[in-house]
Image (cartoon, rainbow, N blue to C red):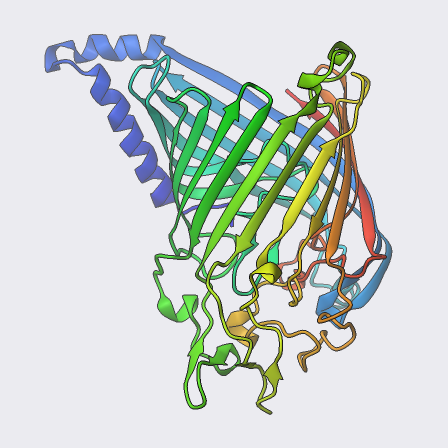
Length: 458
């Protein structure tokens, strides 16, 4: 969820405002003079973006209706973002952002809802996308670190255009990965500390909460760092203790039968949403080594990659998954089946096309890429008896490879055109919460889609 409790936001802004005010107040006699000086030192930056995106699911499926095939399904949305950045002197900055969306329910359930006259085809929604106070500690020109509190967009891999960014767009148990068109980042809520004090080294320490996927409100500590060598090579790594601090253990580790696995002949335990995620990445700017780089664009000839372990903990393969006590042969005990690996390369655009990125991913998980199943049904099972999973052999025939081709061109200042062809981890866009599909749309190798966007930044 993007929205955060108003009390949480107000408290956070109040804390940061107090910190900023504390640096200004020298004594009680000078408070009025300091207040006037504070007002004069404010800078307010308004901005935003508007875009129209349209495309097609050329070949896919909708899991919620028993894996209903999707063919030439048209999808499209209209967005408007408004952002405000208020800088108070040199140390305190308040960020605010809201996003409006006009969307359409494209799920096969829409026709049923329309017949019942209880689901409008078009819906307008609003969401908070940035609500954060940030304070710089140390020298204002080169702070030792910055501390932020609230809701914020977060991206640690600047090269990733579609695939990757695994730490905050994935789950451990059950294993899932999410992607979105031209949105290779995550919205996080909580506390973050970042530092660029050491030249070439960028570090982020986060304590995030709430989440977009069950269980909500758990706290997850994370640490990410990257180091740049000679302006041509960047190496990064990170770790996230997902759901490590549980606020409700019955939700973090549901004690239901379908969530049980054997630990011995007469012993058993339960799966948990909590898990340790580990990430490593690199970026190599190949054009730095070429003599003719003046004809190349800024993003041309970058080679990059990212890999992750979605759950360092091991669970045995002998978990029970139905009332007949059948044994699931695919457990979470093989680390290679918990490792998505992505590689990308920016083809030369020769300053005509700003970015032409081709990305591919291998992910050997034997389970369907679906979330929100542990609480009600237990883990998703390959070839198991659960509805919707019997029509396709996840154990052997599922597509292990994903791919994406992304291109972007700034036609004029502020106005860009973007297009993407991909077989990724997209979920079908729906406007009715009850119609949300928790499983990815592209499952078989023949399934893919495309999207295009007209974007204006102001």
